[in-house]
Structures are given as C-alpha cells and as structure tokens.
Image (cartoon, rainbow, N blue to C red):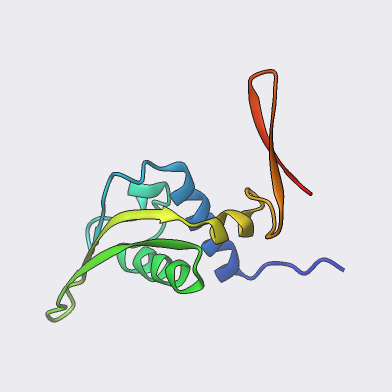
Length: 116
C-alpha cells in the first residue's frame, strides 16, 4: 500500500525541488515582504519558507548558512547563503543512487550512475 504524503511532506519535497532547480550561488533573503517567489514558491510567506528550509537542513537534505536579524515586535528576516541540496536530499528525491557501490558509465557522451 502506498502512503499518501501529508501536506507538510509535500511542501518539504516542493521546497527541496525548488532549491535543486535554483542557482545556489544566489542568496535567499526572506522577510515579511519577500516571499518564496525567490525559489519558485510564491504562495509561501518568507517566514513559512524559512521554517521549511530549516526543516530541510535539520533532516540533512539541504545545507547553507543563515544570518537572522533579531525579531523586533512582529518583524522577521533571515538571509541564507550557500543554500544547496545535499546528497541525502538528492537520494530522498530519487535523484541519486542509494548508498553502496556505484559505477559511473559513459554512453554516447552521457554519464550514468549504476548501482553495483
């Protein structure tokens, strides 16, 4: 039986795929006015996206450096640099082979990883 993903799990996967698709050299600045459209998730508020990114980092699926500005009242802001998907994140998405031995093969100019 295939288990249906929860809304949170789907959001985490969406955020991970969005991070994978973006140029990780570009920083991500999030605050009350800057929403998730920086990474292709415009429906998420800056704070919601920051929480998703922190959860991805906690799970080991992404890594990066964050600088927080101290919240004053209702103000929120964070600045992420070097934000990228890890090998564990790629494995979660099915974009990298499972742990174990793999072989890199080349066929007609294309490379492929094959599990041994």
